[in-house]
Amino acid sequence: MRTLSAPTVRSARIVGLAAVPVAILLAGAMVWQASDAAFTATTRNSGNSWSTGQVALTDDDLGAAAFTAENLVPGQTGQKCIVVTSNSTVPGEVRAYMQNLSPSAAGLESRITFQVERGSGGTFNDCTGFTPIPGALAPQPLSTLATVNNNYTNGGAEWETAGTAGESATYRGTWTFNTTGMSQQEIDALQGSRTSVDIVWELQSDTAN
Image 1 (cartoon, rainbow, N blue to C red):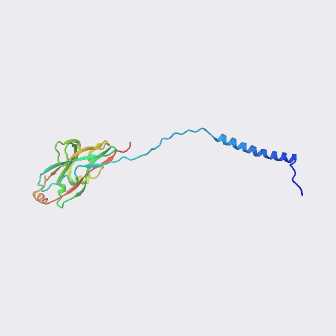
Image 2: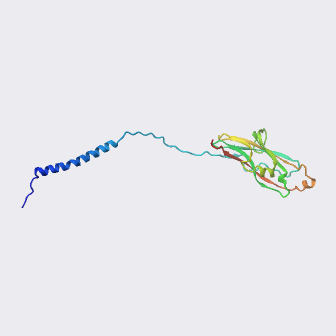
Image 3: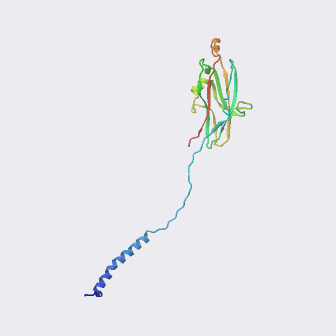
């Protein structure tokens, strides 16, 4: 039986040479990894967020209508006040306007003139101490106000709010049952008539510059 002999010098030399390229490749890989490293540094500003402001408007009417006038006679007039409060976190502008007019068959809405003024002093249904500020919504018949001043764009009695919770302004409404220029027959035709309207105060936030 033939036994394995020790490698000759020639074969040992071949093995040794064959190992050289492997060693070179390994060394090359190590050099590549080392050259890919670098110094780094970072800084972070965490927790960034964006939230919207809010607008909120209330009044002191406690759910009751400010103007409920019964048994009117020609030429009669009256006035009431209401306090409007802003609890907004952003500045804006409040405007007053009329909506939801309920006309009467005899046209009473054209004979009740109404004016809205902004000012200070006074409380709901009580205008004691009220001081008006220029810029009132001009007195007009309810029928005209509900057509011409019926949304925010054409509202009046503007109030610029600063965006601080608890700001308030008093509004005074003055009405008159105006029968000027009417005949007695036309006036008599208004007996038993009824009309109603909503007074709206709307706050819109200022737009970005």
